[in-house]
Length: 333
Image 1 (cartoon, rainbow, N blue to C red):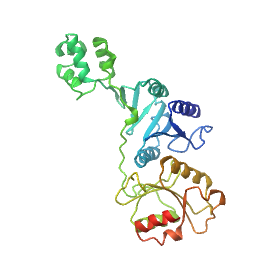
Image 2: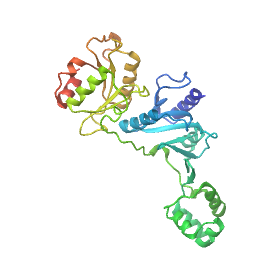
Image 3: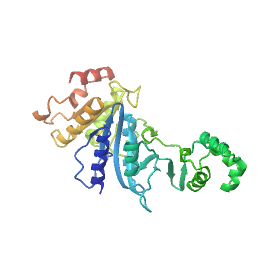
Image 4: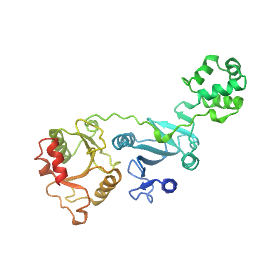
């Protein structure tokens, strides 16, 4: 089911003049990455992921979605099929772990007709976003006092006032009653899913506190620390590279040299061409620097040379003393 949904999403986004990039997961039942599609139009970048059940989230996957959004300054576009009780409803944003989920139909309405959802559903119930100023205008046009409206709704006059100054949002039940009385659906304020703010703190090596690194990875981390760079590791394989590197000054990158994406290769004694192609896709899509850090004995196939990926052997990285020398090494590699 997920692969079919992804294909439909891919078609919808292309029709809306987005560029889409995938790692060939359409034919698989479940993508191992924290995105099924990467999507770009002008300066807008989204990572698309389909979830069969939004109440069955892997916390490592959630962390990777958030960190990737932070690093790439992109937005997650997450499509849900159902929660633990039922299929998801349209015109609704479901929030889990600070991430927004919508249905495929809701996405179709946004892309085709610019119709955005107005219901925000969290655990414990949903609330409706109202345009308080418009609600007040319509109420006054219909010569309905706040007291009269509160009595019809079965709430206090103070609550009506809170809806109109938008310090409080009504439940779906109360919102339907307001709509029946005021008879104007324009009072529902649309929520722009494309501007959703993902909150994620990226401290130095916070991922390392829970996951052990291999001997080679630990050696790379020691060198990175000595150079004075900040790092963020991905250990579960949901991101198609192992490591992101940042300036110690700017930990989440900028529009310049950082962030750098890096794959590692020490055990296979050769460069993994799948990982290499993943790096190249990120390099081409985001115009950022991509590295492949390899052990000294790793063989580099001629088929991947000259493809804009910087291949750095560990012996050369060991000679670097500071960030300035590190940048020079990358640029000269």
